[in-house]
Image (cartoon, rainbow, N blue to C red; front, side):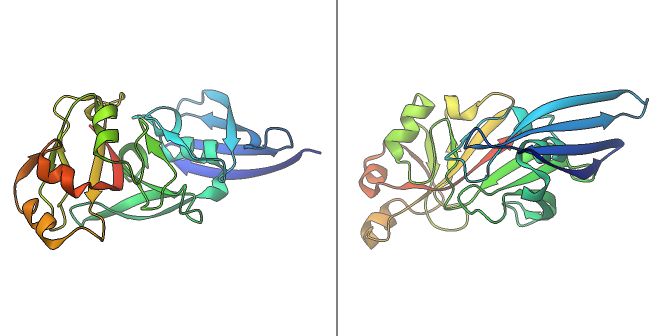
Length: 234
């Protein structure tokens, strides 16, 4: 049996309708959807997209498809279903907020937030942020990845901001490695976290406004892991 429902989504001058066909078959898919668009000149187009279930995962994030540099909220809704995206205020690392999109808000493992370069029209991603319990990964890096994992994915060592404060443990420089250029103008952002069992003396040796190499003996001894990560668009 095939069920159909139609929903509307608007952004900028585009009028778009997403028709979702929910069907049995692929257990990781809700079927296919058709995005119908008419531009300001009256040109009409249809695009068929696959709609994955929100529980299908873990997922590998790439700066393509609904997350491409020129993507819009329409693209995200088309791929994941209108009911799985909501608009809201997205907070940036500097504490400012702007209109953004929350994908799969009811599924912490797959939810993510998208801030836009053009927040009025919800177009062109500026930053995609993942939750602290995310099942997403970027180039094989996800929550809990260690220093060796990061160096392997990056292809070389990197530098870390000293721990302590809001920016403590943030990767400051990928040193020209692969994680600094994911394709599509994307850069991986990572904030490392120390285990609760780390001693005060171990933390003190890697704290403060100083950059540490990922191979620094004190950093290695503390054995931090990825606590949160995001993707920035140039």
